[in-house]
Image (cartoon, rainbow, N blue to C red; front, side):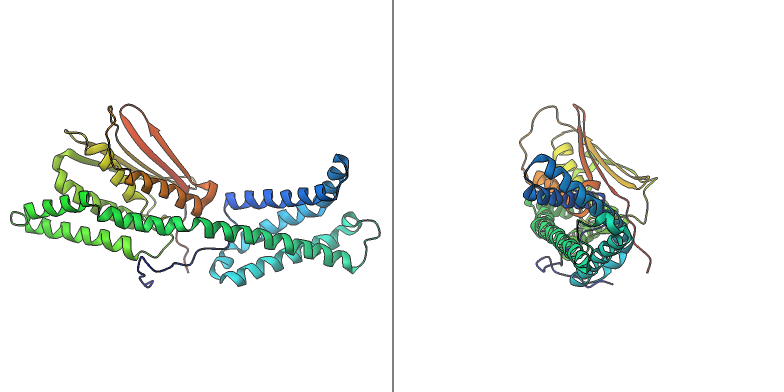
Length: 346
């Protein structure tokens, strides 16, 4: 069992890029070609020179780039388990080795005039190492720039639990049934304790979907306790993969937003629709609630939490994650799509 950590403790960021992520691969391809184009431009005296220089460098660069990405795709599980400096060193060595190997196999194809000695291989290998280090530095800086969103999400989740509106109403609801239904009151207090515990000690980047669903049901139990028949929730988990992993505290804030903005303002209440399913290699999370025909002034804290969800999804899955809002006069639905990830067996 992993050791629990306080919300105030730092959790090491995943600094090495995920070489199986489509967004990572796209960024690497664009960065490498951009660097090559910039080098060709700096050495050219005309557009023809720039085009010729770029094409000449691409003759070696593109095969190295393709083979390097394929190799790193296969090595990605091993790189993820090693510490950062070991993984970075392995990436640099892999790229340098592929560069020299393809350079040697290409013979005169990759050599400039009079460039046939050992220095040619050293030069190409050093260029490959330099470009690799620049790309690794870019991804490291990107993670360090975006990672505060993860800690902010945990703080916002904790703040949501202790929001006076939610906390005081829940306590009052428990007090109202503590004598008439003590078992239900005890269960409600246990649910509240679990919500606090999840916000404060969850140390993982990804958690089991079943655990997130259980937490969400506990939250809804508390809301149903104080709202009674005004709140109805329909769960569609027929095609939910039980082994899926998702970022923690994703589903509950969506439900909190649905209750706060969709159900509470309605005197007659309403129904929240929750649909969790897998389609091909994607996991879908849909949360829908009644839409307001008239604008209602509400606190913006929930919007900040939803914005933070989008930032965390972008940080973890890059372009492979999608956050969509579908809204009409009667319904407001948030639809999240992320890659289907499951815990690997060891």
